[in-house]
Length: 306
View 1 (tube, one colour):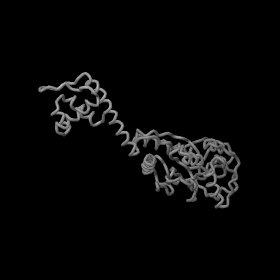
View 2 (cartoon, one colour; view 1 turned 120 degrees about the vertical axis):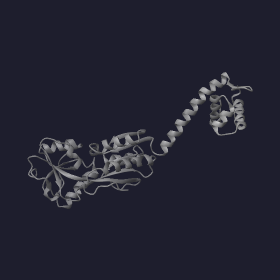
View 3 (cartoon, rainbow, N blue to C red; view 1 turned 90 degrees about the vertical axis):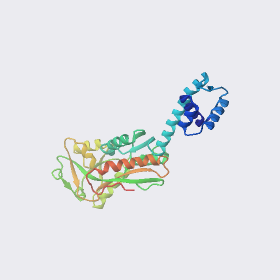
View 4 (tube, rainbow, N blue to C red; view 1 turned 180 degrees about the horizontal axis):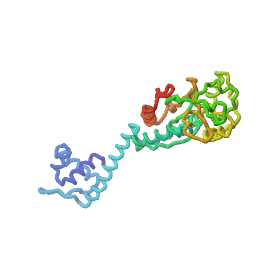
C-alpha cells in the first residue's frame, strides 16, 4: 500500500464516481480503476460496490476512508515540517549569551525571532564567553553571544557590534563631575572587576587597554555579576570599566563617564561551530541581529560583519 493509491482511493470515495474522480485527479479512468483494484488486492477486501449506475463504499471501505484521510493529513504535516526545517524555520536552537547582552540585545533578539520564526524552539543559556566556547565545542550549544572572542579551532565568529566601554565611579569620586575621561586619567585607580579565572577575555581586554596608556589594572575587589560590581563602585570601593549597556543600571550614588579613546570598545560577536548541525538556524540569528542593529544610533564602528 502506498500514499498515491490512498490518494486515488479517497478521491473515488468522495466522488463515488470513477469518471469524476479521474477528472479531479487529472488522469484517465482505466489506470484509476486498475490502481483501486490493486489496492483492494492488497487489503484483501472489496472497497467499493460497483454496478452500472453507481458506486458505493463497502463497510471495509468506510473504515479505510477514515484512516486514509488521517494518514494523508499527517503526511502533509510531515512534509510541511521538513520544508520548514530545510529553510531553518523549524527546530531547536540553543543560544548562549553573556550577562551584559541580557539587558538590551537578547530581549530584542528573542522578540524578533519569535515574530519572524515562531516555530523555532529557542533555548537560552546565560554563560561567560569562555564557557560558551567550551559548550559549543562539546556540541551542547549551537551558538552564542560573546565578548572579546579569541581565535579558537573549529569556532567561527561574526562581529555583531563594537560597544563603547564606559567608566563607572561613585558620585564622590574625583572624576565624577566630568562627563568624559581618557584612559590615562585612570592611572593610580583601584578597580572592581570580574575574576580573570571566570571571565578572562573581557578582563584581559580591559587590562590591555589600560596598560597601553601606562595605567595598571589594580584590582581592589572581584565580583562575578555586573550589578554587584556597580553596587561596590557606588560603595566607594573602586571604579569599574564596563560596557555602555550597563548604563541601564541607575544605582544611587553611581556616575557613568564616556571614554574619549576610540579604541575603548568591547567587541560583541556571534559564535558558532564551523561544523554546526544547525547552519540555517544560526543564519536566522544573524538575520535577526541585522534587523536589530539597523535601527540603532551609530556607535563607535558597529556593524554586522561576516
